[in-house]
Structure formats: C-alpha cells, structure tokens
Length: 312
Image (cartoon, rainbow, N blue to C red; front, side, top):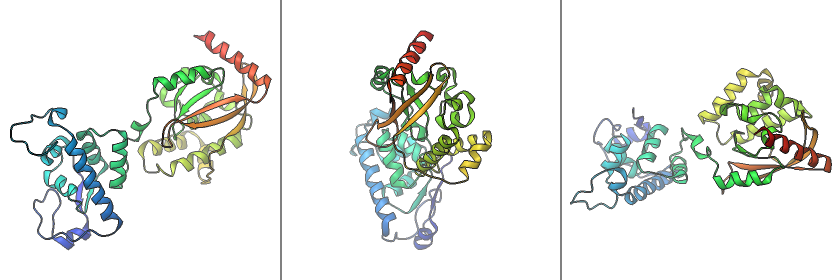
C-alpha cells in the first residue's frame, strides 16, 4: 500500500516538521485552532478509545508478559494498517496532517470498526469512504420475509442510489422480469433510461424520468464524490442521450409519496399508491410499497402475483 500522508503547508512552515517519511519533528507544534482542530481532537480521542478496546488475540497478535497498555499499542495498529508508526502517533495526537481515504480504510480494518464506527471515522477525518457500497449491500432475512408477506402488493428495498436490493414476486414482474437481469442492471435509474420493457410500463414516461433524475440528483448531493455514484452517472451519460439532456438541467426535487399508473403488458393498467419507509435509523435503504387505489387494480395485482408464482 502507498501511504498518502503529508503535513499541510501551514503546519509544516510553522513547526519545521517533516512528513511521515521524514522522521522526527523539528519544532514545537502550534496550538490547534478552529473547527478543524476540534475535529482532529475528536478523531484522536475516538482512535485511542477504539485502539484500547481491542485485544491482541482479536487481531492475531501475541499478548506477551510485559504488556501494560490496555488493548493494542500504537505501533501494533500501524503495523496492522501498514502505515508509519510516527504518522499514526501524530494522528492520535491531533496533529495537522492529511490522510488519504485509502489509509483511513486500512486503519478501520485494523481496528475492526463496524459500519457505524467506520462512518464516524470518515466523517471526523473529513474524507469520503472509498467503499460506500458496504453500507447497504445486504437485506436481513427478516426484511425479506416482510417483503414476501406484503404480496400481492408490490414491495422493494432500495438504497438512496436507486439500486434494487430485494423485492417480492409481484414487484419482480411489475415493470419487467427483474430475475432475468444481471445484478448490476437492477437499478431504477438505469432501467428507466435504458430498458424498453421497463419504460413501456410508465404512463407518463417523460415526466416520470425527469422526476426520477431530479430525485437522484438531490440524493447525490451527500455522495457527490463517491465512486459508485459517479460511475452510475457516467454509465447513464454514455448509454442515454435523454439522460444527458435531463441531467444537464440540474433539477432537484424533494422525495414525496405519490400515485402512479403502471401499464403492465400481462394484466393491464394499474393505479398504485407508493409509500416509502426507512429501514434503519438513518436515511439510506428504504422499503417502498405499492397499494392499489381501486378494486380493478387490486384484482390485477392478484393476477400478477398468480402469474409470478406460476413461473417458479
């Protein structure tokens, strides 16, 4: 691993310090100032607390007979993360250094941080997690049971990037055969701009895709530098001139519940009311359910469920 760690120019000129590869410091460290100093101090305290709770046995290190430090030593964390001991010491001392997301990722792994702790680490460091997908890639078995029990009402679990994470049999046949698609194509934005069968079910295609792009842009504001989001925008821009034109408008809209008309080729038109529920304490994955507005729509959903179950 190549460690991307440098002292900021302001601190280097003020203190005479070198970067992590340059050895010892050459002057006194000025007192921390402002919000950045507060954040560095909080980061330092957080790292110390996480380091002290981990036993050597948890990470495959011998305890030894002369250990006085609770948890791991600083040099042990540095060894596990493949970073310099001097640099890691500076980090726990709240010094004014820059650390790359890749190094933060290595430290998070070395300290066995869970998802909440990892998110906290990157927030304190003012960095973007290089592995954002790790937060919402799995759906618990209990949630999948809820999806199954909601049928014939279509139900799906999506993340804020519109990835389809799990769905019941009715949703799987509502707009296209989701089971037949590769996992990387199970994204509502991708399908809405590139999949003919999916697009054909939308009663007002132009207005719907424009609204979806506006919701997507609003969600992306908190993830604008994350690789997975940028990759999806690049993929859509390459595949769809329509997306490029809409995306260039920079429209945003606040997510709201709505009533939609789906033109399903197997059972006919259905008017369904969409409701979104967050599946955790923070915005991210959500459960979207579609309930029929009238009796005709309910009957057609029941027929769609029967067809889906008959398929296998």
